[in-house]
Image (cartoon, rainbow, N blue to C red; front, side, top):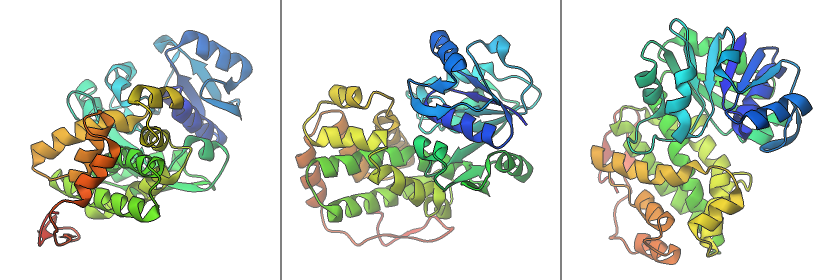
Length: 339
């Protein structure tokens, strides 16, 4: 296939390398002309993914005019850049894969809906899972979920990505796949916070379990399916992101837990940590759909500096005792209490 990856950061570069290794011709687009010229020259992304050679099938470009015929477009930019970069997409009913993970700042929209607003004629899906960029290019086995409304589109994208080290499942639950991929970044910050504060695995396990319950409740209210949150795109991605020191969001949380300011924490990481912006956007969705999300609310308050990390933990521990809710598979009904 002829494929175009929009976004030449670590994630976009990793996907371009994976696809080229699978035998496809890949155009890797980035906005920084000097950076792209360097990548083309030395065949390596020294800024974001050093140490991995770009296969011959990858062509790096910084101009829309240099993007040729494309069978599918893969969006792999930060959520804040999705609306602007998808303006480059062209063609008759183009096939678009949203590989970015986040919610649009200001609107709290899922990214596939942002793409739909800009390119209404596009056939749009999402790709998400426990996919740390450096592990993908190292050839470490992992899996992902590809979700499209039409099974034929999902199968075509699965065929492009799937190989011996990258297993792809298909789904039609775009909302669930995107929401799980977005919200786990906030919980990864919480996991890093917990470790930075010196708490143990008991604390982190309870925090992630309650957070998973909350994001699943929101997903059901938005039309997603519970099994998505219990699968590769949900629990799988949450685990990988919340325990790995390779995770930007985890590292931001850990820095905050050790006393760093948000500015300093982000500077230490040096790349975008989507969970920071998503923490605000998800609270907008929680209010919109009437879903109590105290764990996410506490995390957002810490990130924004309204509450100290230790105080946030105490707030959660001292909430009124409740019976743990049960989310019935496929119904969205909770009993006996949402929290």
